[in-house]
Each structure stands twice: as structure tokens, then as C-alpha cells.
Image (cartoon, rainbow over all chains, first blue to last red; front, side, top):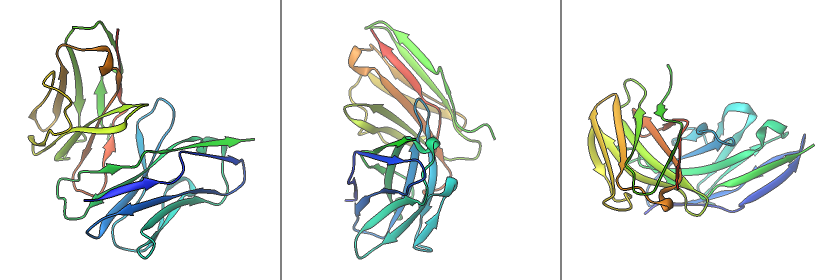
Length: 115
Length: 112
């Protein structure tokens, strides 16, 4: 069975400083991995996805994530935080063999950006 | 494309009443998912459909919950009778492959 663990429930950063959100996964198969962002009172928006192509994945709004099989990690980073990055972020795993696209969500990381 | 459309956006009802949530997936998408989000339990998958057929409803909490997808462009999630513990944000998502799910804005349900 696959699972995903987000290592930090809350992250606080200053505007203009780097952001790191940590995610570890467990999967018996080669996984597809995603990061979603949820702004307050909004739906979830796809930031980026990894599907066994390049291990460094670039997403929207300056975010990127690196798939490291040896460490079973898929950490999300951004070089310089913006106030608009304040939101909750979800790491998600899907089995590539699951043709129905069923997801396993992490518990979420709440990001606070201070001026 | 308008994205996934959900209605109503907010619903306030009294315990014991029937509640129906609606979802229109993105045109051409063949899988549809219903999720529930609460502070205590996070995001939970309730049920999902592929080509209008329910594939897995193991996440549906009780018999009070039911979902239908009569055609490729419409799905409903019904709670009858509703209870205060059903208060949550309910999301619908759709996809055409297993690669990415696109989420609607959600329905915030409050059961008094």
C-alpha cells in the first residue's frame, strides 16, 4: 500500500526567504507524486507533478520539487517566499498502476509568511 | 473551460434534513471523486466514479450518504438525514487520466 507523510504541520518563513516543505512517501510501485496548494476558503490547485520523467519538477508560481528515490522523498521548495504563498500545501501519491487515479493525501503543511 | 463546478457553495441546514450537493466535472473527464475535508480528519475520499460507474465507495461514512452519477456531466452527493457531524467542506474533483485531479471550489456544509 502507498502512503505519504508530510514532516511539518506548520512552517513559518519571512517574505523573500526560501521555503522548504518536506514529504516522504511509501510505495510498492513506481509512484506518481503531486503537490497541491489550498488557499483559505478555496479549492485545491495543482502546483506540480512527478510521473517518472525528470526528477526535478518545476511547477507554477516558482515552486519546484525533486524526486529522490533513494530517500523516498519529494520535497517542495521555492527560493523566495511571497506573501501570496501563505496557504496549506498537500503532498499526494498515486499508484501509476491505478488507472482510476485514486489519490492518497498527506496531512498538509500550513505555511505562514511574515513581512 | 469553466473547471469543475459545484453547487451550492454554502449550505446551512438543520439536523434531520436532506442535503444534496451537486457537481459538474470538466468536459471530457471520465473519473469523478467526492472528498470531505474537516479540521479533525483532513481530506477524505468518499467515493469515486469511472465512466459514470461507482468504483470504490468504501470511504462513504454511513448509509445516510449516497452518491450518483447519472451521466458524464453530473453527479450528486446526498445526505439523508443530515447530522451536525456531517458539517464539513465537500469537494468534487475530476480527471481524464490518473495523472492529475482538478478540484472544484467546494461546498461548505453546516448542519445545525
